[in-house]
Amino acid sequence: MKRDTSNQSIIDLDSHFKTVKPSKIATEIKTYSKPLNVDYDEILSEWCYRLPKGYPTMVNGRFANDKELKILQEILQENGITEMPDFANTAPVKVQKVKQTLIKEEAGFSKEELIKIIKTTDLSDRDLVRITRIVDSLSSEDGILDLLASQKNFDKTSSMQIFRMATESGDYRQLLELLNDTAKQVDVDSLPQTGNIIDMIKDSGVSREFAKEMSNMVPYTSVKMGRYEMFLRLFLRGGQSPSVKGDVEVDGKEMEVKSTISKGSGFRLRGNSGYGNGKQVQTSFMKQLIELYGVGGPNHGGSQNIPKPILEAYKQQNGQMWYGTKDSWAVLANRDMIESGLATKEDVIEMWGKALSELYPNTTPESVGKFIGPAFGSDGSVDMKSVASRLAAYEFTIYRMKEGFDYFIALNYQDNYGFISPELTGEGLVKLFANEFKVVSLPNTKNNSTPQDSMCAIELA
Image (cartoon, rainbow, N blue to C red; front, side, top):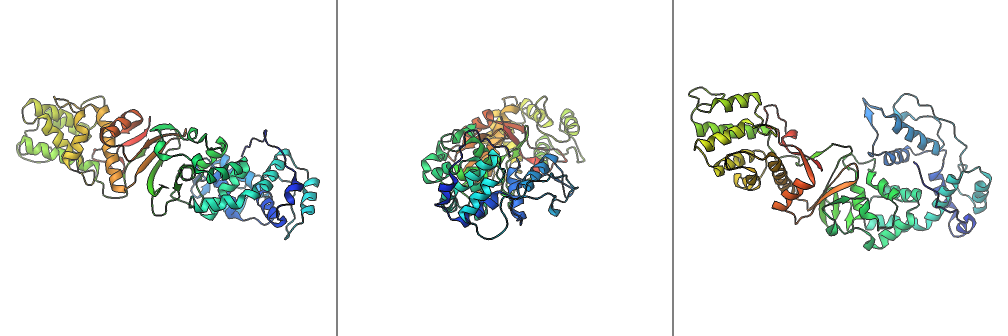
């Protein structure tokens, strides 16, 4: 990991050793340097938090990314290991030999022995800065670890990992100040709807380097935690690891976090159960057409009163009801019903609302129709750009109600975010999804639709 040491100064080790227990100094230096007996859990933890996505890439049970393996190699070198361990489960990787360990493996060191070892070992400026930070940070360690546990509800492993990150970047003093003075933390209720999350903590006192590392931190023991969750728990005032459920807890309220890791990647709004399938929407709308136009239908015998162009479009489009460049079979039906006097604009909106209520739990035709109605023209046409933001806003409303969270934040690979407070509802949500988010796709109503693609796909604009 590249570190900027240009502004660091070397402290007087002798004076620090006079006030710190030798055994504790030895323990910390061995942790940061190259002990002979290595805890591979620590190696894995270090490796994961240095990786951009918080975990290594695996293909068929083997680590598959050369750049990630190079980072592992660097960590192994830092710990005095010259061979790739068995857990790597990969082809042998050439590891350069490293210098002998700084400290011999034995219990206890006097201050004089430690100073002698440091003075007689060929250390680079980077090594000296690192040791200096370790020694200097000891006076902050207990306070930081205690506050991370009591204030942020972090477990022991995560707290130590954060402390070491802060020590590496030279931010341990600033971290202690941040925890002691909660005014330096970000007030969630003052968050703008959009912005750059790293810019938001510029007044916290910590460096951008440490903030970026926190944004990528995913404890290697967690299989569910996503990027930015530890970041938000640390930097939000009242933020902490959830005591019950959710991604982040803020003053006892739940915050839902969605993050994407590459350009063009998006997310969907849904819970674990209770949602329908896009095919059900298509089937419901067709059934209503059959009832309105008369006995028959594309899959039924008997007289056929649904106009042929609608049925041909239905077959050609495989049941999809949304198109941005042409009218779908459902929009063609809208136009025909209104033009022929079979239905009014309000009737058409109610039909769409009834069909969409098959998809979303706890939904009535009236509730979804209220959101999407303004996107319908008097002739039955549908403004797809408008209906996209309106349907996304409705999906979010259902998602928030079903999951029970208060705050919502989505973040992308550039650290930009979109924030939704508990007070933002109705047309305010529609406006946000129209201007700050991009609805990549509407629910798939084709015959081969799946539960996953039956929801809107959304990304930050």
